Length: 166
Length: 186
Length: 157
Image (cartoon, rainbow over all chains, first blue to last red; front, side, top):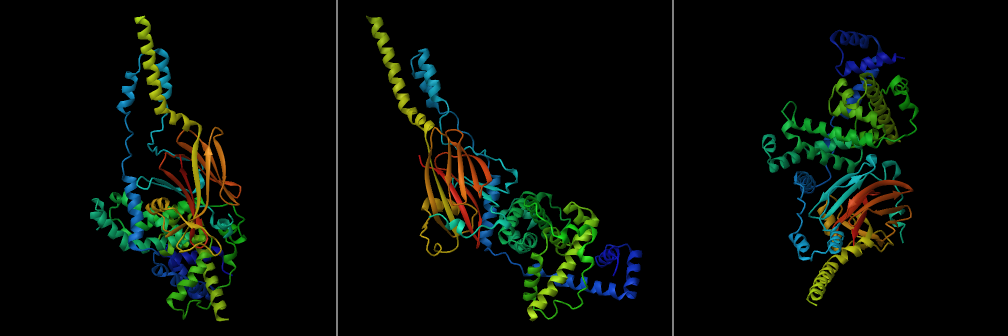
């Protein structure tokens, strides 16, 4: 049985990672040692088997569809943040319309606080850093998408998970 | 095409995507072993590629530059999903040289006589049975053609660990391909 | 007498102004008490029909339109379950989605909610989301056989 260090050295020789003097040494050893030569043959065959493997892998989406998602994400990231609307003039005007009594002014201030303007505050946070979530917001769609890596690969749910609601 | 893209021409960039999309997707698929993850990560790589185009100086081919981006994204994703799991004896011993040093040498070429498509299927199955550390080392060496020290940097480990993982991965692949050959000849 | 009339008129102006403002702002005050929401559990698939024996209906057109604007690849979406609920003064609601999943929604203010998705007893994600009227939150992930699960959360008030 070849020593493990020598096995790794043989691999380095095969990968062109050895200095020239070491390479010559391994080459000589291979010529004398059939076990080592057999291991080299095995490693060679594995390498040859792997070459070209990825050439046969094709993206299973059409050019247009694949590109549309990339383009949308680039545009989303490059779009400037929408400006916050300034306080409508009517709010300021109303304050001057109300007769000046102390209690009425206080009452108006209370009523004008925290109004839901419907403007979209894009600042959101995800509490779980390791959730593996990918977030995408689209103003046109009026939607925020949070894509989760749930369930995980080793937790593939039963088909019944989606079908269990009746 | 690259220069036009760097100048902000998105039509030119779309053409680059079209030309290289299979390669980038394939690299992501080899790493992730999952079609959806590979699609998502390859798309993310293209978005990052667009953002970093100005940094591309032509020191490597554009395709190689893009594969590096997608590999880094894949590694980030794999790290995120790393689970506490009971490691097999093989994985625990990888750095000290465990099972692979005792595996008998595969003497018969397990891929001889196979058509390209069938070979690809068998390799696909065998790759799926490696741990992601072993598969990553193999992908980075055999497909990305990185040297040991570059792999060590990318994987955040020592050169010795790279060599062990690569050796284990290769020997395991040979054994798996031999098993598949035996299965199919029954 | 004149002083009284002036005082009365001034008081009348104040009351009128308060009434005007009251009717303008009253809906806001009502919203501070109730936030009406709806969750929808959807199934995303390239199949034209739901699974055998399930009468899921196709997702409503407005939601479909928005999902098609997002980088999602499925052709069809079916509604598995819809739940309307109100975040009233109690401010928190647990919304069952299926036997194994639920949403926990906590109201932060008039237009912001904190949403937790609980799957198999574990919190999968927690998100603080601004959700004004007209906007939707979509949580999603992969499901078996290259399909997807999605949860839509939207305002209905």
